[in-house]
Image (cartoon, rainbow, N blue to C red):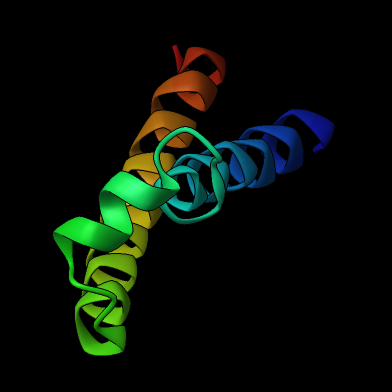
Length: 71
């Protein structure tokens, strides 16, 4: 049970950390905000798109890592 929880939520934490780098990371913050022209709609669109992709990716990675139990 601990493996499943760690894999599922650990992948989500890493994924959301990666999503936040362009907005909250000091190195990329200005570059990203200039690229989207500080438009809240574009930032929200990018966040929603990336978070849904990362949720699917985290689920797939979790299923791959837990599949060793079924083999």
